[in-house]
Amino acid sequence: RAIDRGGLLVGAVLSGTFLPLVLTGLHQGLVPIHVELVQAHGYNALLPILSMAGVGQVGAAIAVLMKTRNARLKKVIKGALPVGLLGIGEPLIFGVALPLGKPFLAACLGGAVGGALISYWKVATVITFGISGLPLALTIVTGKVMLYLLGYLVAVIAGFLFTWLLGFNDPEE
Image 1: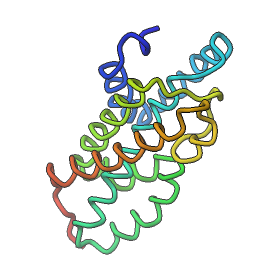
Image 2: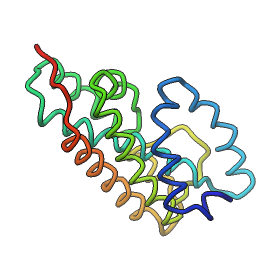
Image 3: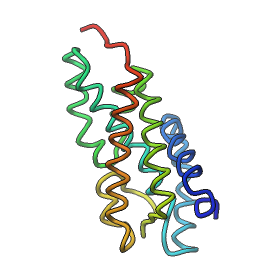
Image 4: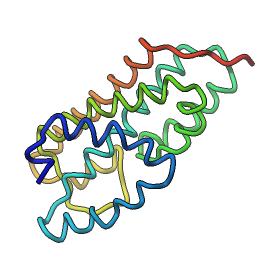
């Protein structure tokens, strides 16, 4: 399998390119792959990697929240962050990262860092699809939960740092 052989690089590419798939809805096309992985192997190594894309976005949103002076944007972020932590990324994509541009790129890069680590550590889940983010930790195979949570933390920090360094044009009120 490519994930097993590719390690860091494959994890980075898969997670780093996942948010653009979510933008278009094409991520739903991966559902049969998730199902096949669980049926063939008893676990799914792809889902934890891809979930890091949304996690990088959480970090990017936190950086925007800390830097922006726009009250409306702060309100949007505060409303979207809780569901982002739970793995539902669309409110952060369409309400924060994509309209600002650079935070979307930073989220992809942060997700790539987390995805690289998750792939390298061979973290897998026992489910096909449906949950992501923090709740996915409940389904991670025995012995890998702490690595998943560490990858989660690293992706948040990376998304935050990339956003902080790249910056963004703070919208007027």
